[in-house]
Length: 510
Ligand SMILES: NC(=O)c1ncn([C@@H]2O[C@H](COP(=O)(O)O)[C@@H](O)[C@H]2O)c1NC=O
Image (tube, rainbow, N blue to C red; front, side, top):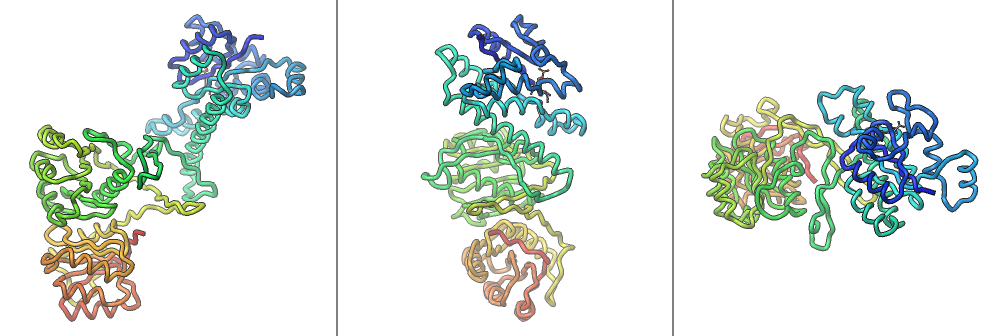
């Protein structure tokens, strides 16, 4: 008996030459409406599925292949006598090869012009049913969901049969594909219910690339992206120069971008090991970078710099003076590119600035599970704070306090940031006690601590941090407030003439 192939594809690219080869290999082809039309137009012999089901396609194509004559042919176990008998009794012919790709749900859901009705009509029902049936019966059936597999299938057929191992791999691909397809549908429906954390949290990611290794060379890693997002990020950036990004590069660059998003003025952010080491703002990017560099000219070595303006010649000259892993910016002028591409080891990434704010969740894996929370998107302005001390901060201090507060949100807790003259001057990150973080920031700032302001990511449980700040010459402090012992810190501030403001929110980052 001739082998039978069922072809029903939305994406018809390459299907006629593939089907033609299948015919040459001795397959009889059955096919659905549009696909049949394409095949017949190319003079490829094919039979309408309707002839197999003895039932017309109905409901605008909502029902075409959902029929026992199809699914019996897909699911019958070839080594099971009872199954074969049932096929015979019901006049069902086994199907040996299935080529199906699905209605473009992702493309429709991401098309802003698409209506709810169009999105719903692009939920493929018959296609996934056939794919799943064929994949379940991979021992006997070859299933092809990805047109890039046509070539390898034909090669296998030329030299014999598609092997069991190949069929199992193709089946795995199908179940990944249908699971991802359903995950997108599930999130579309869940989104409309407004339920943030449903009982089953189904997410799907698409592979961008396999990475050489993870955080360390003995760890394997890959980079995945969200299939449906309006978010500009590393996954959508364009690499203009340099070698492939590493796992650590992507983490650090991402941290730099998240910090950068806090600032509106021309800003440069330098990051090391996911903490900022220098942030500078000014009226030009060149000045902003000079500030970020001056903030910590030691740590920036081998770091990542993210800019929110086109990198021009003046900025490029400064950037090229030091060893940097990556520079990310919305663009580079020709001159800047010329200067920077002379450096073999620098990676240059072009990434447009995010237009609209996108609310995203943040995922942290724990052993055997995952924590999911909304991202820390809180931002404050000068009018959101309350003054806790006798002295109010001056306008100049307020500006620097807000700059430091935006920065401290992105520093691993316990975190202290000192700022002065539109740049950070000292950053204390990831300490187990707050005064420890303050001491590191003060030590790093050296003489620049005098006249600087301080931001603390969480409240002061005791006045020791304020005492350290006073000793270092810090003039103003921003912190959440809310400790039972706030008054102790306020008293020390008043004693030294320090102005302290409370934000009412904290920015833990663990
Ligand atoms: N309803 C069904 O029985 C059914 N069977 C196959 N399809 C899909 O129809 C598409 C192909 O249709 P056509 O050959 O008419 O262009 C494929 O994407 C296939 O996944 C179906 N459509 C959607 O559910």
